Length: 402
Ligand SMILES: O=C(O)C(=O)C[C@H](O)[C@H](O)CO
Ligand SMILES: [Mg+2]
Image 1 (spheres, rainbow, N blue to C red):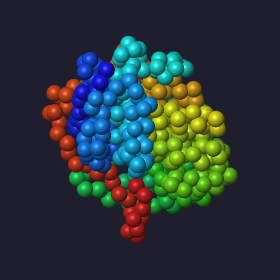
Image 2: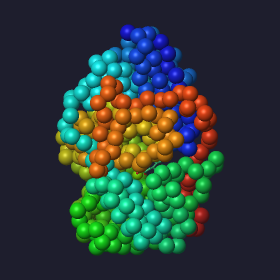
Image 3: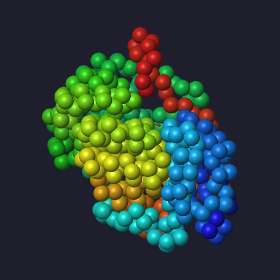
Image 4: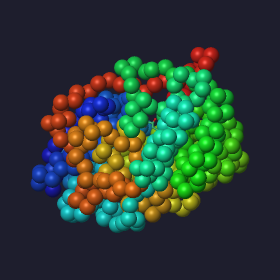
């Protein structure tokens, strides 16, 4: 069997998605997600100009060898653009392998470790009262775990608070929108949200929160301590993790479980975080961390150190990534949770899929492969639209982390 074509498809059914379709001489094809929010076209070029020519004529069943060829062969290792492009190839090849085997992909990884994949949804509101109502809505939909984000008084906008409640999309403009941030206001407000949520709904549901890389280690330690009485499932992305050892300080001060890693692209971004047991959940994903082949290495390392998985699953990760992630989650022994932000009906129509949600769990489905396809004719009706993620400034104008 040989690869005869590899096509990069860019579509914007409300937001941009980049998809790689790898076609074989026997007619079997595989699909991989290559979406890197706000930097989509860099991955398109990486794939079209530098990867596709190297794929033609290769045996698609040599998934590991092709991964190594693309990773080692580039000489310039790692980085989000490279690893997203490699991930797209990897997932497409796993899809092909599972289709040839006539098995759902999780069977090739080692089979089922659980019946369903527990997911968390995103409840958010402009103020505490609205967020509390939204959490109630998620509980009514069957969710066992809910991330709660609220607007902060005195700040015109806050990360995680959306007008379109079910379909959060932060990449909202042709040039980056400017947001304003105050750590003091945020730190004073967030514990009140979780106090109100636990008072109203009790302790039967998992609650999560995302600080979106805006704190210093000592601020994160304080927030973690303040949130301890409310028993969070996790506190996410308190601190940017370029400096992995900064998590030591947070760890020394709080028992609130810590999650990080949605922007990680390789095992080296989290090696110290994992081996020193500085985190509880690793959020690296199939699409941004080198595909199933590389994410599996990260998860296996994490398993040795009591770290569980909690894959990123925002709307900018396409249904193709979600499908692949659900097969991974169904197999991975040290599974923690899977993020699940729903895609719009327009996106779901472009990417027909067999995964289903029921009572707080997602199920990958039983068809051969990862179970997600692309309707190319429909995709062509939604041309690429430039869209950037916002940037963030402190109240005095200083550039900050978004
Ligand atoms: O889903 C999350 O936890 C996020 O933080 C979402 C990110 O802001 C989003 O994926 C950026 O593209
Ligand atoms: Mg996050």
